[in-house]
Length: 359
Image (cartoon, rainbow, N blue to C red; front, side):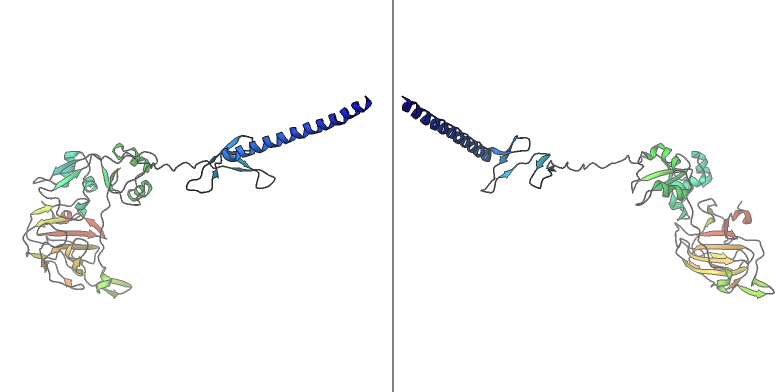
């Protein structure tokens, strides 16, 4: 009996050990099966959640998809946070402001019109005719019958926007505050106040600058001599002036955009020295005058004779009042045969009618 009990106890212990071994083996097999399932369906991230594996195409190596903010423990003891989210595409939208919308009238010059009468008719200053029609300062005879002019609604300058122009540069050019340019509604200027080349903006209150060419002085042509304590002109005019031509057919009078008088008459008529003096210029002029003669009268006065067909004098030559110095023509910026006559005093263009009497 005792032998039987001892044998049962011995074999019972063995059965328990075998049972424990079977349980451990079964657990190991279950773990292997779970690992194989992960290999097929994805990996597990740091939180224990499965991450799907993307099947490779064309027999390539399968790649594991990485989610945003994946924790990577492979770089060392410290986890590395990686972000593989897509970068947003750049926004292709570019700011486009409103373009200026200028409104103005046009007017066809009628017989008998002058800059003053046209300006008065539209309630603007004569300078504003030049502000809308810059060609008037380049072509001395364009203010003629049947010529179409731009009439601006307010006094100022219609500025052609060029590449590189800014409100600040335009303000400096015309001496008009930036705020005044912005405030003019048809300019359509809104923050950030961009300007667009090949458009026009109005500069209210501005006056277009007229280029004035300066001729050589007396000393450059030997028109001076040394007497006593200083340099003096070789000859001095009478201080009075005569008409440079025999005609009186005025085609344009003196005004801001044309600081001279024009007298129309056929080509080839004699042109006379308006007063005694020294010729300082007698040649072609590239600034619109065409064939030009300039006489310095030695007393602060200079006279200009432009658009000539022929020239009878040379620089440095002394001429006397009434001498024939050239012939009327249609050269340079001219739209018909005429004489363009200027009088300057100390370099400033003055109205010849004050000296000649243009009645």
